[in-house]
Image 1: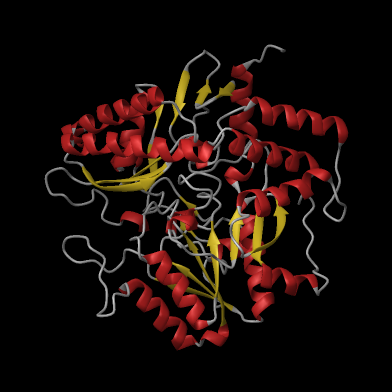
Image 2: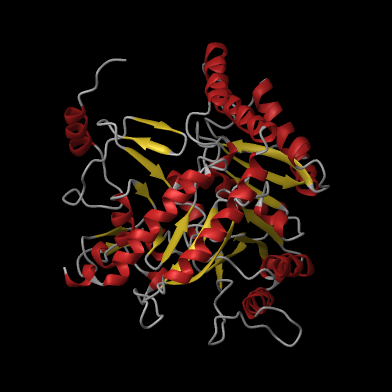
Length: 472
């Protein structure tokens, strides 16, 4: 391998690339020379244990040998073949999802492959509106469904709607004019919006959660005949919140009663992340449409997908669908998908994720006993949410919480402070929301690496609770 001049790489990176999440003045390149398993490896040999799992998307771990071999084999066969043609990889990938993974369920119809999770959401929204011939879609406060035009309209995190912000909240701030809000999108409350003083989600006299009741009344007010679909995440990913257990079953019941489709966004939670193949399977329900990405290929190559019910598939089969995506079903990406899913099945990765989740829960319980800054925590598999509170007042450090913007001083954001301190132990761990940690790794992460990550979190929480960061 040719020797890389990393100083030159950093110079080019600074000079020619547009930044995300930082201004040019703030930006410092962090070069990564290679990856392995759950580790990012820097040019000097420093190994960083990645408990972000990048964007919670490398389900199989970095550079799985079988997936890499399948990609190389596909490259020897194919350059590019667009979606109008049939390839063995694309057909097999669809068959694996519908028959091998979901063969025990009677609802799945057909798959449309795309390139990213955002594109999958765009496609799902289009399908729902075409199938129902209705304009409105209901999303929720603090949901994240992507950054592209249509997907951004159903993303309801203020700091993740593709806008701009200056180096502080008093300088420049702008959402994309005309795109962040849309008259065809309605916003329902987050699953955890209505709570009592003890943090318990409130219900009416019939046991329906008030968040669901409010959503139902909103749809009834606009008219169910105007609403194509309700789109939800089973666990709010970027929003970093777990719903009460009753929420998903009640949303599914409500959408059926009102004759509205349920789009279940599984871009982050799909393919074993939660200890089941898909997050909805924890709740004994079945959706109308699923969006997929991330774990579909374990991010070895870009791939996303939309899976629709038999009824929707039959409707689409009767029509010419004027929809083109250049890279949809790219044969090399489909080879990666096939190999990724085959390895997951052969090596029982979903069960491994479930077992690792139980171990992580036990470690978090011990940390909560020690650290008063851990409020609630919840999760499953390799997706965990940990709320950080002021150890003395038991209140969030950042009052705006999930409505914060990136104009805040990062040195005053608890999850950023934890991330920087844990890095001293060689661990990448933190969160996208200011008061909430989000923890994840590959589905077959070792117990030793879980211990290492939890030890680093312990170390970082000691520093957070000391208050030293508030004096600097």
